Length: 106
Image 1 (cartoon, rainbow, N blue to C red):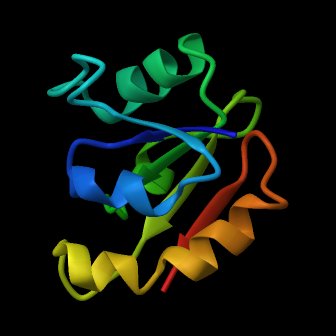
Image 2 (tube, one colour; image 1 turned 30 degrees about the vertical axis):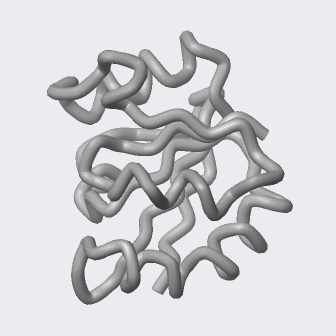
């Protein structure tokens, strides 16, 4: 599975998804793109999932009909140690996620 990480996610988090092809928005030179354009760029790049901590994306963007799914990590803070606690649940959700799905991991 190809996974794009939003720039607001600690880039080191990609290292805890070893069975997936992971890339950060910053590495792809997509930093600064707003939500809709970031989703489009991830789709154009052939990514299956966008992982973010931005809990507003599902309210601002309609994901139905999209080729990409969204996983939102809802941690107390954006620190790596807080986000890493959500990785097992995120990996489990990604095993059955489909394009257009929105999953919030708490």
